[in-house]
Image 1 (cartoon, helix red, strand yellow):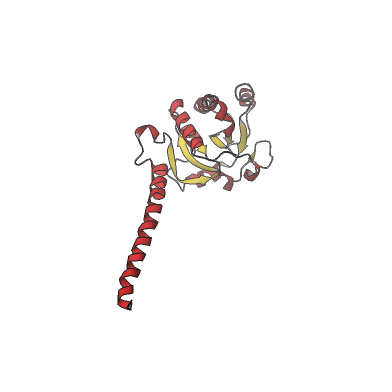
Image 2 (cartoon, rainbow, N blue to C red):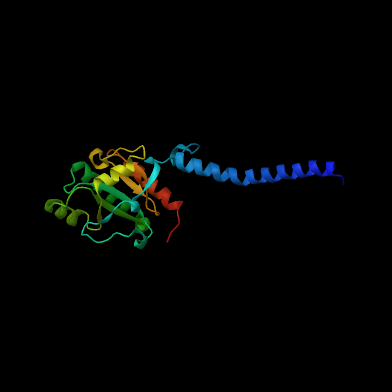
Length: 206
């Protein structure tokens, strides 16, 4: 076969290889776009929360336990987490968010072990009245703290509001430590439950 005959065959082979790569890659690209934007999903499968663009890695912030102990994310169990930011007193909207996330957590039934609830303290120490409330109503809530400025700096890179606790907002954090969705004070518990169940279904289990 002459060189002139080989050239079209070579180009044909390159085109076929490219088409094969596209056949493999396009479904993955489409799945990524659908997962992160909701475009193309049936109405019942679209995320109810607001996606953070881009997600923010909570372990990059100077987070520690409220008792002063070190919070090393690498040593924490693999879990999804509700992260409720708040002050040392936690106003009524804040407490409503604590109640809602607790009830949703209960409704996860056997899957509840794959999710934790965090209260992210942003200002000062937990006040005695709030501490008594937590001990009575939310004994399994884990309390960590971080400087308000650090959280605001992270959120400044996103389309999410700063000082989220003052707006009554809270987050869903994935297993890798990324704040990836936020919710407002008027979120329906059924909507939050749908989001969490969907994330658990599409993520790995330890």
